[in-house]
Amino acid sequence: MAGYSKAFVVGGEGGYMGSDGVNPIDMFILVGDADRQWLEPIYVRRKGKPLGRIKSIIPAMPDDPMMVLDACLAFMPDYFSDCPSLPAISERLIGEKRIDLHLGTPNITMDWIRLREEAKNLFAKLPVWACDFTRINQE
Image (cartoon, rainbow, N blue to C red):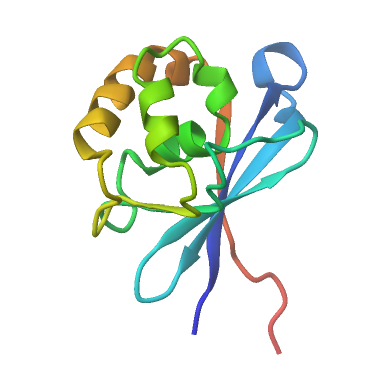
């Protein structure tokens, strides 16, 4: 069985410096769990455009500390357009529907590591919230 266990929310800081949570919401990143973990986007406010035709990303390991950065790179590359490695990676991903950082997507591994480094400062400025899914009603 597979299901979603958590989500990350990308959006603006509501109220004064985020005191009212997130508003507006640009995108949810759902985290699914099965034999491997995967992340997929749900675009809310912004007309999202991922890298190529990418619909999901599989992190190098479950709960990888880099998985949210990786997901943001894959699902909202326009935010990271100043990163020099992005065009080459985008070109290599033409036709791909998934980025697999666990088993490897051909031809991007070293460039992806470089892209992460280039994107770290931009990512640090991006408001992202985490939410774990907890059932509130049980019989």
